[in-house]
Amino acid sequence: MTHDPVTLARMAQMKTAYSFLSELFKGYGFALLVFPLDQNSDREDFTSNCERADSIGAMQAFIEGQKTRSPSSDD
Image (tube, one colour):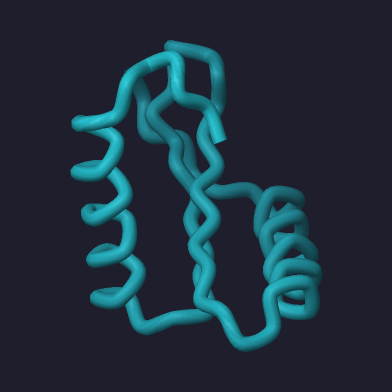
């Protein structure tokens, strides 16, 4: 696996997504994690409107919650 550098195009996409999510979820925190479906890359891109520690805490809580959920219970 290679850690590919972020491209200017991806940075522009992430800024666009950030702006859209900021408007859509006013009053809420959000975190967006984007990663390739190609198994030959480990590039992950992340944006959030929260402090990094708050975003990480929310993601950890989400992951822990998913561990106890049934695989068939989709929301």
